[in-house]
Image (cartoon, rainbow, N blue to C red; front, side, top):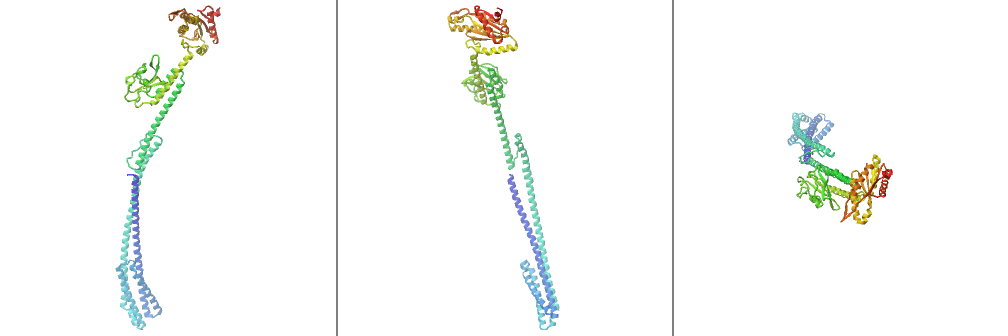
Length: 594
């Protein structure tokens, strides 16, 4: 039962008991009033009867005195007493209106009748006195019959007073008894009201209100501090406290849901920040390895607990090659044809929905066929790589949208890096020979000379020129000339492979920087180049190109020149080799020796 219902019933019962107590108290007061009225009536009757007795004796005494003295003043007083007695008799006749009973009135009327007879005898005696019959008047007033009548009147009035006292005493006792009973009933009603009030206080306020409210207050305080782990009390009572407990339980559930959503939101923002940070790092990557390192670092954090691999598409051969992996994925790092992955085929994530029946990618291990996700790296409408994730379940499944954003960022970074590498290669490498070009030489020379100065190691430079190259172009054409240049460049590249850098300096000229090589070591390398070129056997179509020779000039730091004129010294040595008839090696040291 609801507290409001109990309270209403208790309030109604209290009101009823209070009204009943009031009525009983009014009845008790009425009984007291009746008691007082009976006492007042008794006093009034006693006073009247006493006045009658007094007036009877006084009038009788005045009549006797007048019979003896015949004093007019006594007669006058007698007449006054007679008038007073008549007034008293008139008042006694109205006693019936004041609650006198019939028996009492009969006794009273009988007494008044005797008094009237006495007055008649007194009048007779007075008349006898007026006639001069004094002896007869005295005999009448002092005689035995007259005395008996007086005594009879006295007895009658005493009897009336006794009956009146008896009735009044009985009425007072009855009124007192009734008043006491009513007061007892009133006290019981008040006590019952107090017990009901105490019951309401004890049962409702303490058991149904105070105790539950104290428990709910503790729960509310903990919920206010966002401690949603607190267990809400389960009050089965169907009342306001039960409603409050249910509302607090709903508030706790909403708080848990809100806390869970906040955690998801925070995790979501954390992943977004990771994606933004990864994108920023990808924008700062200088080479392919930087992109791979960024992917290996951020992928396991964006998809926590999910193992995976990053593949890139090599155009020669047309294969997907694993360049990075994290969290120990199942299977080997094998290459595979792009068509073995449905994500690469379709150009979108595969399978579309995890857990739904779908065809598995052929490159995946059999154990991962149903728990893997492949996301292609798309750039300019082409798949250039692949993100392959493993061990995905309903409990740890990452947001596919974030994985696709990561794939998009990696795809753009790889595509930009490839484009950058291609542009850099075109800017720094000669497209015909694959050697570094003259623009690359400027930066490399600064680096090599600074290193030589810092470490104190020697640095040698070789200037190589193909002899009579113009005549080869004129005799066989430019394609044959290109063949000669490519062949010589290949020999130069092989000779300088270990500790040198080869450049196409321009036209048919080449340059080699040998870090850590002195004049003798540079001369030995030049000899390999010279011999290799001299032994070339080149054919252009069906025509054999004649022997090809080169002239080489060598200069070394710090033996022959400083860093700022090293190339100039090597060029001087080359010029001297051409002056001496070409097809030879000349070092700057030989020029200094004469």
